[in-house]
Length: 450
Image 1 (tube, one colour):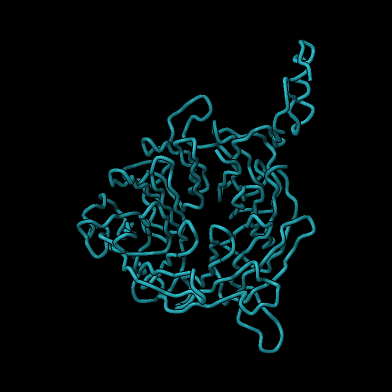
Image 2 (image 1 turned 60 degrees about the vertical axis):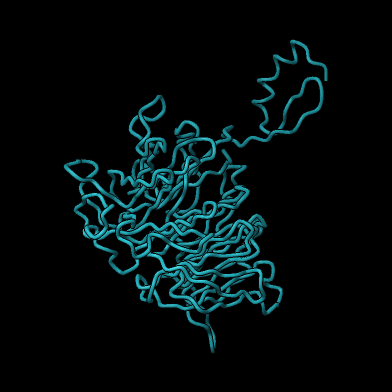
């Protein structure tokens, strides 16, 4: 195509007409597809509350400048909260707690494409690149003689003609964790019952009449979560231990390269309900007991009005040891509560969130100490910051090109500058460190790679 002045003058108009073509001057070039918003650094925040000034839905945000992209949210049921996204970030699920359904959203089109009733509530979902999703539904029921007890993993086809394709019995199923390639899903029965086993679901075998589509592995101590190695050959199982009615919190090796999978070494830790793997270090957070240790018993704990604290452990997977275990002089104190959110920023700031923690003070009328459920651990110098905020932490999102972390805490969407571990300073787009959204924010997910 020959490019002259008239052609160049037409380029803006051509770009406005379609978001799926690229005019190329002087040779062929790749086709560039942009979403309806025309932004390629998008973040979604689930807004669950309806009010005269707020509609429930998924709020679209420009993640480069922390600004709302449009007033009307993407439809996702009457009260969307928990979200899960596929590894390629093309398909997102949002759980609607009013209808107990998984709302399917296409991120390229920024639109809802389906709604799948789950038959019960869920607090854990995964989405695979294959176009299938899995949700842990602890109250899922079965009928008929000899029916199994309540609890299942619900497998969903997320395509245009999708729906539930299988309901896999796992009593009291509460948490699902997918392997990096999506060929294995760990299923945990959670903290609400003492368990010594976990279930592995093999998605490629579901609905193939293969009896090995699920495998139960025993030998654990109230397992509640797992972290996979990068190649998926090993899972590090977090045993909740005494916090969940068992004996001792620990990290336990599960070898997935054998048939059947085999249980390996146990590494005692102070508490274990959530973890994050970085290199050869597995960061593990929890309480260890139903209350957690006394804050005053941990020298590193900042002076606080909170009686009990949680702990952060740094497990060395090379030596298979935790130098912080049962060692008050080196233990790392964080807020208490049930720890189920963890994420690391691009510059090594580890964000740990919990729910049901001890809240201190009032962030809207600060008088003395203000404390919530968030801790930030600097992996470079080992310091801990507990930001002056209140409420449960329900969502965390880091970015590979920005030194910021999005945090959903107490219904607000905060933006932290990870260079200073504090709310981002005022700029042209954000004045208070909070993205102002009318309503109650539950979860946050980046739907572009940036």
